[in-house]
Amino acid sequence: MALHRTAGTRAERPADADASDDDHDVYTSLLGGRTLPRRAMPDAPTDPFNVYRLIRDELDMDGNAAQNLATFCTTWSEPQVHRLMDDNLAKNMIDKDEYPRTAEIESRCVHLLADLWHAPDSAGTVGCSTTGSSEAAMLGGLAMKWRWRQRRKAAGLPADRPNLVCGPVQVCWEKFARYFDVELRQVPLESGATGLRPSQLRDHVDENTIGVVAVLGVTYTCDYEPVAELAAELDAVQHDTGLDVPLHVDAASGGFVAPFVQPDLVWDFRLPRVRSINSSGHKYGMAPLGVGWALWRESGDLPEELVFRVSYLGGDMPTFALNFSRPGGQVAAQYFLLLRLGRAGYRAIQQRCLDSAARLADEIAAMGPFTLLHDGRGALPAVSYTLRDPDGPLDLHALSDQLRMRGWQVPAYPLPPDRQETVIHRVLIRHGMSADRTALFAEDLRQSVAALGRTGARHGSGPGTAFHH
Ligand SMILES: *Cc1c(COP(=O)(O)O)cnc(C)c1O
Image (cartoon, rainbow, N blue to C red; front, side, top):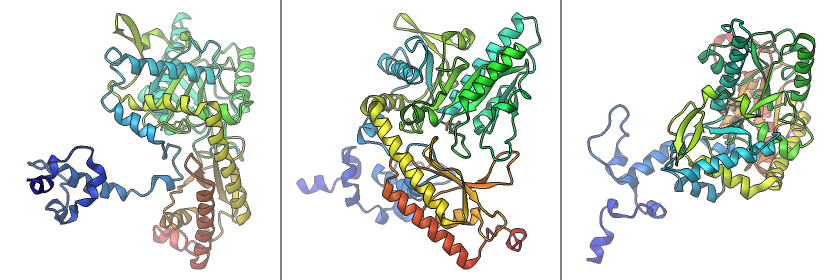
């Protein structure tokens, strides 16, 4: 009888028996001898252990997320975060009445962030969680568009040609502009600049400008745009022309870096011009993928017409979101991280990352062929660099391929207009990227440069490029 039990089918095993998965050889099973279905769903159910194992094997081939130095997003989490995600698998963020504690935790996170970002009245600040900064940017953009339209209509002026002024923004702002019918006035980069400069604003803002976006942690180079200087210039524009243009800060990454390691940098609600801020909880906020934050300075900055009210335990729960159903675990994990790390915990982690980035930047500068665009100091814990001699034998695309052979993902891409002739590399240092691993990366970069020097190879995607040099 006992023998029968141990020899029983896999389906009889408890669902949490993962630890003993490996005692079962999926590769000699029926499923292990076939390719997995690609175009049509199978008729019969299959043993969960075998399917799990084979899907995991396929996903393993994505590579190692920790070696993906292209992403800003969290790639390392404490076990309690994994547990909270699992505990809350079935919680739906939108069901505020069914899950009032989840809703309360979201609201607490908003107030903790409002306090962190120096909102004048952090208890009265309005905000919400989102799926990431992209959704938060859409909400921020919509609020600016609605407010602008109200002002125009109240003044009896046409409100049919809104524009948004920004520098080199992440693609979510291009999406916002296209989806919501707003002209995106993307100001070209000046020579030597990594972002929007205050002196460029005056030529681009006008009565139809719904707002200006400043980026704290430009996606391309990881540098900060000078938010306070941009705000001061908008103050001057208002003084000279009467145009009152709000400033939104896209602090997707910087929102969870600057408050801890650059506390004297004034970029947030300390500037009255800043009416709204977005940030990605799943970037330097260290929450798992799928959470961002959008906050408005005062309730008046978020037009009432955009807020949907659902009845909530006899009360009233305002929601502002593009999605309906959305998982609640990420928000719980964000609250866990804010409490578990505290300011000192975030500071220690971000400072360690900055130190590693600065050391890596020095090493890269000393290698010879590179010019730094961001040296890992004073902005995001990251390094961006370009070639000292763009017409020389080294090619950043080929170098990316070399690094990829060593498991590292470091993309090569051009800067936005008007510097698109400059191709750059960008390396993000995140929690989980130890000093040792950073040193290993530097060594692999050095060896990759040497390997390319030996073969003299440039990125040969076609005959046109193969014979250029
Ligand atoms: C990553 C990023 C975004 C988009 O954020 P998601 O959280 O990935 O949706 C927007 N703006 C900037 C500056 C970013 O770095």
